[in-house]
Length: 368
Picture 1 (tube, one colour):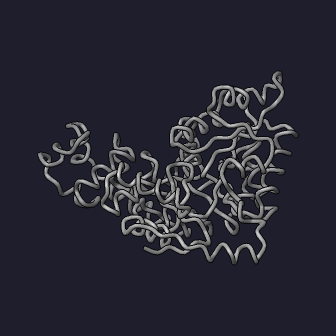
Picture 2 (tube, rainbow, N blue to C red; picture 1 turned 30 degrees about the horizontal axis):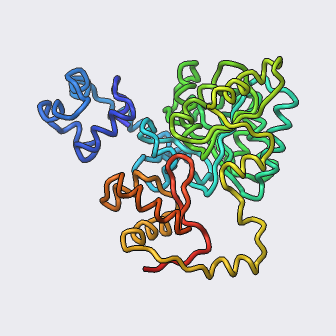
Picture 3 (cartoon, rainbow, N blue to C red; picture 1 turned 180 degrees about the vertical axis):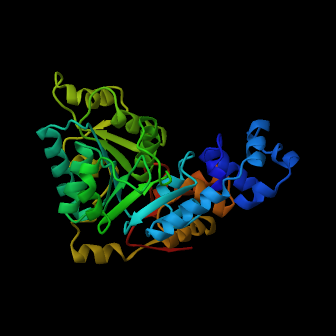
């Protein structure tokens, strides 16, 4: 915390320093000459590290978190959202309050205009009702309009839902949504990278939006005009390699102009129903199998090479993993790992997911 409080040290630079020095404490003990040898760490950054002491402020924040039952999730923790961790600019740590599992099987980010129409609210309701059996985590920003409609419908359907906030957890913004936020603590939670005392200032919302985009397997823009937070979130999700979807609207409707433009520019794929989303994402293909069919499916045997089986065991043990994690932990380079995964896809052992993620196909038995 003390490291990230130093002016000029953002998430990427902080993680770079930690990686080279072997830990946050080591950074403060390191000599200036050694710090200057670290890539992208210049004299100004080194001077800031050596001349600032934020340890008291960091301790105060940590004490606040403990006092109010707030979890502090470091990016090295298994509880940290792995989807977000795969994004280069993900926060070094997150403050989480609530019971939410940030690493579910399915996760969707739902965003849109604050001035939602009845059409937009209806689309949110139909979307979540159609996805209910998959039990996805519903991610949004607790704002007026589409955001709060997503949270309320998720709660109504007993779906887990998390709100990403542009302020500290010592307050709720907007205050009108406090009762919804409190209800979410038992059926999801609240998430922020900002310490207590942080006001919901306008310039903090784009940073909040990257967390919304990073937490979802896909981002769904329900209704928006040509500019605003939803458009920013869609572009960020697209930059992360995540799928972006948008509901189309009438050409003269201001509140659908942004969605129509995202579709026109091929930033978002058009959807008109939950079934469209499930087809695009390859979700729910096993939901309607009979017990007999599932039994047959589980009898399928697939033969893999030793290196393929090594990747398969990692995926079986830990669930979804990114190709970067698979490369790092297997010790193979990107090209070789990509080749192995492609062969495993052809054999029907794994499937690729948005954001360069992979998972084992349920119901297969693997052997050499």
